[in-house]
Image 1 (cartoon, protein in one colour):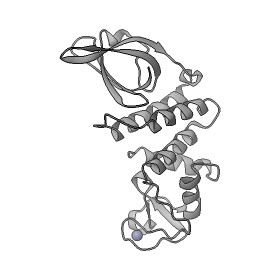
Image 2 (tube, protein in one colour):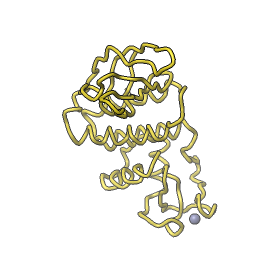
Image 3 (spheres, helix red, strand yellow):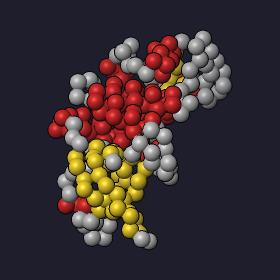
Image 4 (cartoon, helix red, strand yellow):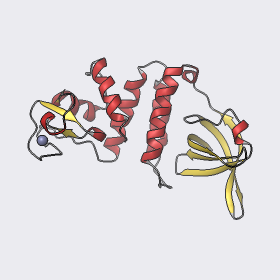
Length: 208
Ligand SMILES: [Zn+2]
């Protein structure tokens, strides 16, 4: 079985409880001497087996690291891990999921070596918002401010989860509404400047 390590937690000994996102669910598995196992790290893709134990967490066995070349590049790996940590919080308390999340990580991981890592992650997030029905898109750009419910004009500010608002209502930096709605609609950052990408990256850090 394949999965992405979302989180791990050391127990009183050197054992670990590891959360793994697979195609179907988020598994909580127990790994003896996990702390000595360098493969076990947030964001890594692994092949593994699960062994059930009566009355206890299933064991994580036969781990094989399905590595990506970018893991050796600190900045790329850092950005990836940052997104994985946010995703873990977002999916906390979820057990069964659809394959969208696993496939999202697979396609993002494939792009990460060659493309700007912040852009890759922002595009993944736009896809996630669309999948969850949380991307506030209106084809005619008749969008409302989430604070005052009044119509938005050309310039908008962004709240957590890229909710759109008037700059006067939440402060922060102004973005061009058309650019933002195009980003959310197409799930592409191609129209965004690098400094806009940096700002969106900071807003992403507030939580998915
Ligand atoms: Zn407003």
